[in-house]
Image (cartoon, rainbow, N blue to C red; front, side, top):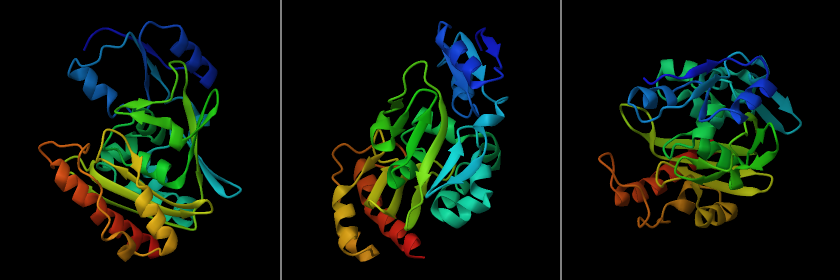
Length: 265
């Protein structure tokens, strides 16, 4: 790897300051994407800012009718947390299906959300539940946060500190995983919330998206049969060695049916 300066700030303020005055800094959360990218010489940041020493970014708490999860909370912690399991079991299940044990014990929710990988699981949960991304500067609704392939609404000096998830009436998640990486070839998160039904899809396009036709059908009748005959166009779906665009479009319907069934319990 190329030379870089390593920083381990003792506060969020110190991290933001380092992020603001360096030439090409990168945040290290779990390092699940950044470090392999650096090893392949696809990224050469001038500075690495390690958030591992910031306990204020770790933890899960219930606030009113929401769960607030700190940005540096690992996938494994989300998956085994009793409050998450009781209040949003679909989110605990999603976290428990990410990668392998090593990834789940190092990867963090904030790192995954900020990276916005098109095949990541958490973006579907954020968009499906209507979550809010909390940064050092503001709060961003999930509907406005994910912009495009590996692109979010975050500003260069902005740092995710937590994610707030509204507790739904019921929710379910189902994905067709890559057998090696466990990334979602297609994953669908369905939630019945106080504001209506939301259906979010990850893995199928360059960024997570909602399927309004399915949402409308489920609002009338929340059952797998309501989405069984809804087809999503394959025109702008991802296509690669793992699945063609047509197959991904087909999987959206299949995973949506399974997610609804999971939500029904």
